[in-house]
Image 1 (cartoon, helix red, strand yellow):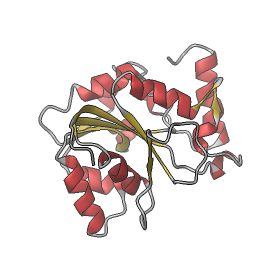
Image 2 (spheres, one colour):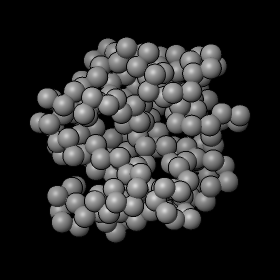
Image 3 (cartoon, helix red, strand yellow):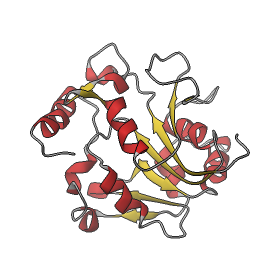
Length: 206
């Protein structure tokens, strides 16, 4: 970990294999409205954070520099391990974690989410009552608590983040934010990818 604190760290989780999208390339390289999911997520994070690190398996071919990449934790898999690897790569005052498969979540949406954290260790949205820990802001003490949860055997990223007693933003508030509830579309299937791409090409998403 760097000894020089980073003001706002961006952590992009891009390790998905993309099997459910039906292709042979990593999910991050899937086309969504003329740009890859990776390019869209990097642009979003880059507008809000500096630096941005990309967490993925060491052997996964992604068009990012070696200095920007963070390998998944040895002996641990899944989004919680990836999140911890990214958060542990730099000291930070604040961090934004974003999964590559949330292309409709805009800078404005994430800025609104950030404003709700206050002194809490984390803040996340729960569209439809489902917590979204992979589009969440974290304070610096969250890293140690999440790492300890993983060491204790926790593998659910949702349970680990909810154990931080985060601010959780529900539908009534999310509906009034940029993009509304539709911004939280998670792309896991060809149909969801096509729907997200359609919104970009029709100009209904930023």
